[in-house]
Length: 156
Length: 242
Image 1 (cartoon, one colour):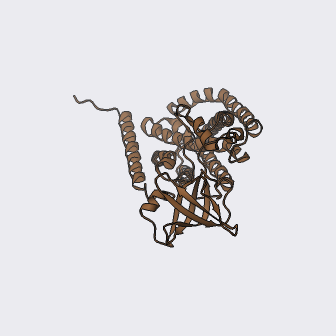
Image 2: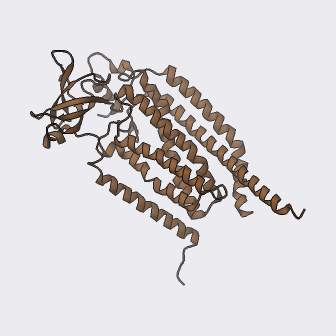
């Protein structure tokens, strides 16, 4: 006599099978979307295949330390956006968010210019998931990032 | 009366449990909220804005945990035909929706001063908004196809299928470049400094207890509704004979 599953268990197996199939389908779709669903291009991606001049694009990266330069008229800034692999010069005219600063992440809407740089029309600050009191952030001699890194990973 | 056997057992546990869940949850929320507003330092970059964390993180957790519970209830209903599963699902959906909406609203309020924008279509925000619509769909479907306080099979399947969004929300900041920061609290530890982190555990536990309390209260209300309905039906059918 063949062993038959109880109806209850049959339904359970069916439900679990359906769940696994759905999750697998979702993960496949998500991985297929990997490039499409990215919110911004990294400097490396931008440097490797710059978008057409004037075509809307979004660039995200770290603001390189010491790279922010104010325009002579005081209304604009220029800085280097980097991801450690490539650097892109970004120019912007307007007001940046309070959290936009050197050594922090940012996302810029804009387009490529003729020289391989990026002209931003809007800049957002990216927060980096580190939260700490100001005493730790403003200790003399060290930057908040350096201190944060030691807090983040004491073993390092 | 087989269908009532379990609900009765449930009620005998749920009744004394309700005040503990609700009052305990509220107490933790009050203490955690007070501590989060007055006892913790501001963040070195964000300043006082960081305090919205104590509401935003529990909301995000409960919005997602709520759907996970809906999916589990769906499996229990389909596989075991447990009479409480559908009732639980109906009870979970509305508080789940509320916390999901709270998460989106508090995130938006935080995003304006921090990022410089109220809303961006990045992976995390978009997938969380999808969760909100999933909740709306579930509530609509559950109400349209109510079966004696429980939910229909289609609704249970919908809850299971919708669970696919949960890993997408969770991984959205890892898979894709996103404006939303990556995970702060992982198995390897937290990038939130201890001085800022500790009230979060209080509000996280507090809101979770309150959520459970609200769900239990709603389940009790639905069961009372079913029993009142059943009694009315009995009385109506017995009416002409008496």
